[in-house]
Length: 285
Image (cartoon, rainbow, N blue to C red; front, side, top):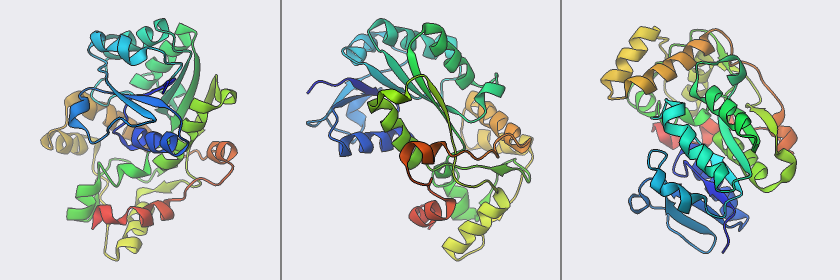
């Protein structure tokens, strides 16, 4: 097996779906994990598993050896791009990586305070070919990060007000990523990936109520109360402030734009929220 593709973030929502997509195509690839022995992912005929840590340069050369295409995800805990992310990206290019598929954010070009904006600029400055996947808010945030409060308290507590969000299913993001990693025509492209509709959180709560056959409500806390609750739950300050900033931008209406990029690339409609809610209903039961 000769792997030409390296996947970072392989155990996350999007990364795990990218892994499934490449496996389904029997395409050789490599995944880089901080601690390979702590995961259920095991090497097989089409997948290598190697140590890789953004914060440990000693892991760079073996992870990037022979790699042409890199799927790059920013670890949520790393917000200092120039200190924690840039050394690994520069090393990837120096080791011969020719194309970076980067999971970015919808509207990032107008949001210079986010780490994703800085990473995009870094990649452009390095002169490497790229595909930027500027994804809207993940539907799966509701089945992971917000799952406990929906399941146990019957509420969605996010500081977004009445603003709408064009949620996207991570399965669609991953499918586009697989195309970008395996087809040259997606290089040097910037795609904005959304679902087929924009919803406010009151509508989201109603849809979840219908699927779960019990009442789910949207509480619309203040930004300060949201930050306080996140810190009480044990989440780091840096992570919490980045997330709070993203929800503040959403509150201003910057996450409502719906695009057809998913349908144009995949040749099928983007997964609607109702299908996501049905498929993941066990997350809230």
